[in-house]
Image (cartoon, rainbow, N blue to C red):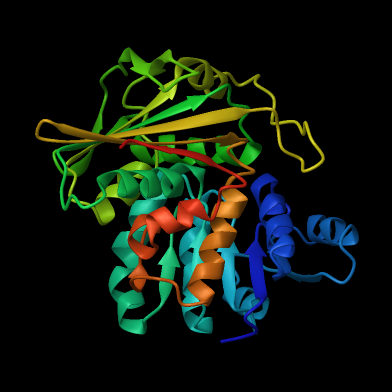
Length: 343
């Protein structure tokens, strides 16, 4: 394994990638900038003198091997992950280093579990898909809410976004997912992912104070439908999105996020409200914060730090809730997230 502080960020010049690079530097890591576009990499590096730049392409394994040489880990921020995840994972396995990504694509995450679980476990490798706002944070909150329960009947994850200005990467990933599904919708029910053409229901979700009840789109399925059931016995995993945010996402004219502070974060706020039910009992957990793309960076970097310092619970392909001590992990992000747990 290479230097314990050197982390390659593939797709470093993207919106989320830039946040990850900044967070790595803040935490004392040495980021290596990688990705397909050499000019954009050089432009990013110009504002960070001395930063190593290693262009690479997913259709050129040799370039990926050069990019990962001597690194301790790789973070993949380059979507669509249906295209990038497998080649970068293969390169990480060849290099013998951990792989973490920020994929929100349901099918891409499912592919990672299906394709690499046996190989990664046999190699003692660590591969963490969806270590992001979607997939990672929800999984950690459900794991915390479950507590000592070994199983639950249902897990509900409601996303209270003040709005959603999607990045170009979000739109591209969404287009790939829609194409793979043939325009159908997806949900996790009866212990499996299923595709359907039903209209999505509209209902009211009782978000905690001060947000309060809001209209949400039901079965607005996100990556949690892959991460949560990958390690928790929950046959029904449902996710919901505030109607305003869903409208923003579906509107092609909604602009990309704009920086509203010195850190580059947008003014967007979020509340993720989780409810798990078993029999007649119910448990809740919630997290508040700002900017779904920016908050992905501390989630990713905390994961990298814990992997490289041996604070993990398993090996192979694993979601955040399976790999880490979920309460301790979320507690470490107190400067980025405000947590609320039911008694």
